[in-house]
Image (tube, rainbow, N blue to C red; front, side):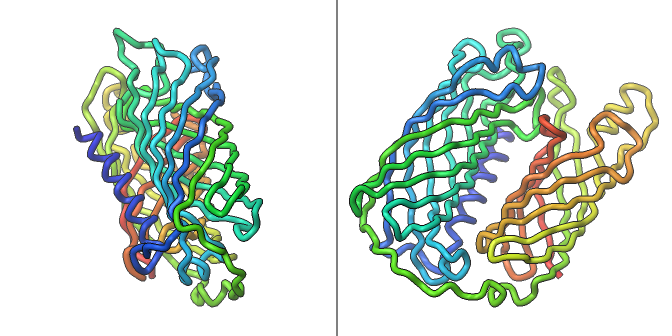
Length: 365
């Protein structure tokens, strides 16, 4: 139940964030799109521990419901008419005894390109929850090193080609990159990465005639292009497959953000972490190394109104115990609660292995 609450909170956070892109609730004439698509793909064997089980071809289908944002604020922020939506999907991993299948529920944000034309393009960033029916078990399913919790985290990125047959009917084809893991909450957690190709059809209620609008100077949207931000974060994780006890991880970060485009900002800053799970590992092995870590992060923020998707590359400036690579990646979602306050979630990974997922609150100076 605690794991479920963590991921439910994450999902509700994302839903609230994507719906907050408009100043008001959607009006009745807002275009509502209902879609169905099929998927077929493969599993990336990103680690030797999962290579033997990665030789399969996942397939599935997806139901999709989305709203096209046609308000003035959306046009100013993105110079396009983006979508916010939700998906319900089923994925069969083509290995019923070990990997089983997944039932996914997610929310997404999807900017569009050349939406006024019959042929147009879009890209999507989505997150959500995944229910997995065949997880790791030391006795009944020890070969599944991909995931060990029935409720896990879903991340999706994709590009779409859309062709409008009629104002209310559209064919969509795309390439999806899908990732499922538990964010390091419990081991093993190699995570499963499975790209898929998709083809589907969509019916649009209240079709909208997308009119040409004047593109405003993005600098007017960001008069204060440089900002300093600070945040504190925390989480907890287990040490191994046999021990379910969780040990806390707390940290703080301060960084600068400089807007370089309508939807882009470059970031750089420092991070300090107290990893009590590492302290417990050191204690059990009789080592006296320091369990603190300090690092430098550089990255990029994708600005989606009050919703921010961040990607960071970090490397350690200080660490006393060398059990992982000197570099790592962070992927995060944040929501601007007010001009000065924000809250978010970030996933930290060393190469192909998730380290932990943290919850954070921060202040913009």
